[in-house]
Length: 476
Image 1 (spheres, rainbow, N blue to C red):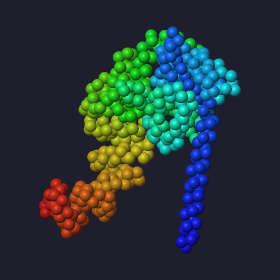
Image 2: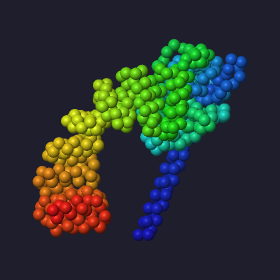
Image 3: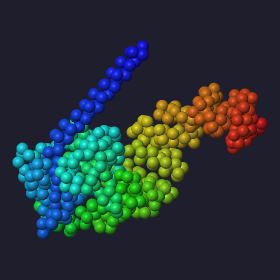
Image 4: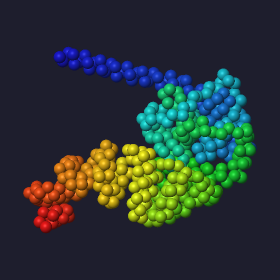
């Protein structure tokens, strides 16, 4: 037997080494394949002085993608291939200011221009990635890591967090998966002494709107005149801060963006969102209303108005905002929030309808089911409440759900069933005093005061306020 065990250990060790060697062999092959597609980018001012260095990569034989901030303020841009050959950038075909992307046109021999495939698919957390960049002008430098997180930023979209380091000069580098496909564009944002590393999803490349070719110097001149272009620079820095949940720092950039361009709805929206997270709801309300005024069909802006109005106790205004959002777009969470606001106004019939619509859109919306059950119970519609809590058990089988179900069953004079529900609640949480009180109450209703006293003694020993309430029922 020990001999067999040793053989198995040796086999497992050999297999593990083989897998490790295979992975090490694969990565050099991948890097060798994608390296020629990455380029160094050098920018110059009108006098020919170098302004900055960055990175980019081919997505077509005559097209290169980089970060917009890499080419900002320049009048001439060159790309350097891995073999040292240099080519002048002919101009800019598209810009995504908020995504910090620029699409450049170049004239490079097709044999030297090796495009990388772009995938729209969002990468998974833990997925291995490679970044080929040009830090400090060291062309073809490679770093690898994993996707540490994919963040959804409200009103903007997704941001990819990566562990691979992005050094100065690597902004605009391709972030490539193990199949050699671009899943993002590496971006280094420097703000107030911070270096913020993340990747912009490759989907934004596919969304670029190509227009007539514009020279780099012309783009720079337009940017200097254009309030929106300047504001977008601060906006993208704010988004970088949001990727780290640093709302206090992010708000400074969004405020600056709205100062530069008061007609910038996205900047107002993000300002409102950050104010809301920071519990500055009066400021959030003002910013979100500006966003909605500038973009009247923006659902999320009205949702933010509703959230801030609710937080300020302005429940009628919250109802109006959520209903405006629903006129634009259905959403289970919006219906749920509407229901919460109607609850504060004691408009229970409308509240019930809101929760029902939320559940119709999302049958596993546990919060909506819970509130719907409570609203039915409030109206003494105990059977409907019990049916709702039975449904909730599928998605949230916890002490609170079973206790609420038991209370409905007790009102329906189904004492045995309620007893089972309360015992289930205490099985999930033995210290849930309300469920223990209800269990005692059920025993009283069933004519079993001895068992009710057992529950009373447990509550009394726990010094629970529910003990006296149960005692009154046992000894009326």
